Image (tube, rainbow, N blue to C red; front, side, top):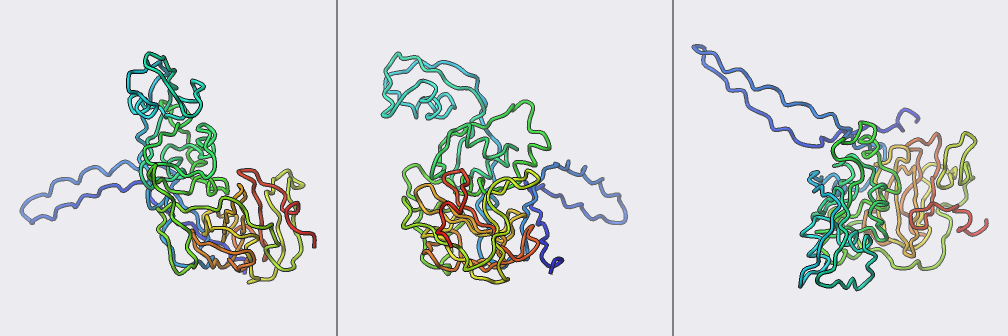
Length: 358
């Protein structure tokens, strides 16, 4: 079982290098020499997945289907004198900075009233213009910057859906470029990346797609999905029975555990701990193997890892107690178990404080 449990890594190119056909020739002349081979770009573009996880047919995730070109505009800090008819959006278009950042820089509050002749401070930096379908994960990979740093730099909040035409600040020194370690970190996904950076961008006045009722209807990966606004009821245990192998918090060696691990037999039904919408179903985090993430509203998220079989799709609405997966020993699990988390916003909380006592 141990050997079969380990997944392999799938390699995806970050960009397609155009090839050349070397012309064939007649025997009476020498063919021209081939052009020099294109320079290989060393980028950690591996998309690690656990291939031992059984999943439903689904399109590739949006950050794979819609890669990002790193074409951010770098501007210096400056001042701008408001012209008649200006608004923050127009000033953002003229200067290249984000309208939200300009408002913060100048202590402007909604409805962001400005006056002709007013002088505004324009924050400098690298500003990426978001296009339709782009995800935070893909933007982070394009610039070799961890998505969590971009979230913090732009003070992004729930529901973490980017809008077409929005500008996001890319932290770091554009002239220096990311180090190999920084770029590798940008390509490593964690739960926070999937919770905050996996939704594709949509038009400013567009609404996210409504969740579907069944896994038979698959939403395109480039469609943003609406999430519940508030949780309905409380949480229940995601598996019947089982023994807690590891509790929430730091371990004996100082390693952090953001949830609890429950020992269960193989193929034990894993059920939704509360009503919600599937935000992610896949195996892109190697250590967690088969993984389902549910959004419940009220800033609450639940996470289910090490599954051997996934029974739901991204964008599917589920009810508390509905089977969403079957337990397994995938990822870094050494035995059949379930990794279970509850998060309040971006912060993991001890699930035992939210679950009923057994």
